[in-house]
Image (spheres, rainbow, N blue to C red):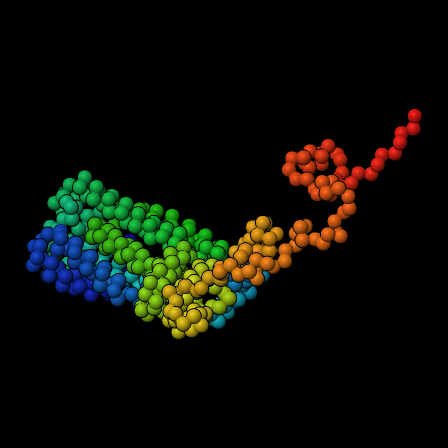
Amino acid sequence: MDTIASLFSFITTPVSWVIVQFHTVYGAIFGADTGWAWGLSIVSLVILIRICLVPLFVKQIKATRAMQTLQPEMKKIQERYKNDKQRQSEEMMKLYKESGTNPLSSCLPILAQSPFFFALYHVLNGIATGKTIGVINEPLLASARKAHIFGAPLAAKFTDGADKVAALGASLTDVRVVTAIMIVLMSASQFYTQRQLMTKNVDTTVKTPFMQQQKMLMYVFPVMFAVFGINFPVGVLVYWLTTNVWTMGQQMYVIHNNPTPGSKAQAAYLERLTKHVTHHGKIRRRSEKAIVKAIVAKGRDRNEFERKFINGLTKAGLAAQSDGTVAKSEAVAVATVEDGTPTTGAAPKRQQPKRQSKSQRQSGGTKPAGGSEESSSSPSLTKSDEPEDAKPAGNDKKATPQSGSGARSRAQSGQRKGPQRPKSPSKK
């Protein structure tokens, strides 16, 4: 680790100068020799570096999403040229060039932080060994060696012996307890950040090897932090824990406001956006307009959550426009003009005809309001309206069909309805 840190010694002076400037401010508040002054100086260094790296973080998000979009094409290339690795690499590079993506772009924030991380390690290692480094002179070196964070010296490590820890004015138990807690928090924050990315901000409709790699890294990175963390000084653990917490908060903000299409985060975001738009009738934020504009431009290629969002606007009487805004739907506007009354935002429901009962259908329908004689005297297709000559001759009692349980009993006993044929005389 010391050899790697020495490679970035060119940036040690700027890093030590920034720490000293923050220490001057916090030292006036908490005291120059306190752990709060030196610890907050390291935290402020992290925040300053991460603010400067925000453009790279935005580029990382775009590159990661572009890589997720290309995963199906990459899988086809791998299957097509699985026996020709050289041709496979050429087709991959061609695909990257055509789409304008770069696989290394997703690693830019980590690569950009590495020089500052190793420079800080080099500074803290000099404090631990009692050597002046950068702009840290003898008085600042003595002050930094006295600074303790929850009883652990700024330059102490988990693997240090009792003699070295005693030389820094602390006990071995305090150092190991504090460093162990910080290592656990550092690994837990890294695991949560990666898990949040995999469970909420990944397109669940595409199953690719990229997702499997990310899932593997979700477990590998925390283990790596735990292994290497025992060799980090307390000051470096403060730096790395702060940058992990910053990354976690930054990612939560991105997932909440600009989720990956097809992910669970997008479903929750579009549901919130639907409620907001239907309540206010417009879109105010520029980021929301950009998302709606992208959804409209997709057309038939929209995913399930995007189609649900468009349908929700339609039910509310709104329509998404190509510029990312929403306007009143034309169907609702036409209904307003025809009725002459303003609509409440929902499309008018179609009136279903009222179903008539069997007795109403047999009697020719219900009488309209007002009781007109014309409707009551309308002809009905019942047996009572048949002409007299159509009725069978003979006894009226026999011709009139019987109703009730008598007719049913004859039908069940096997006798036919209507006039019975005379039985032939039996031969004796």
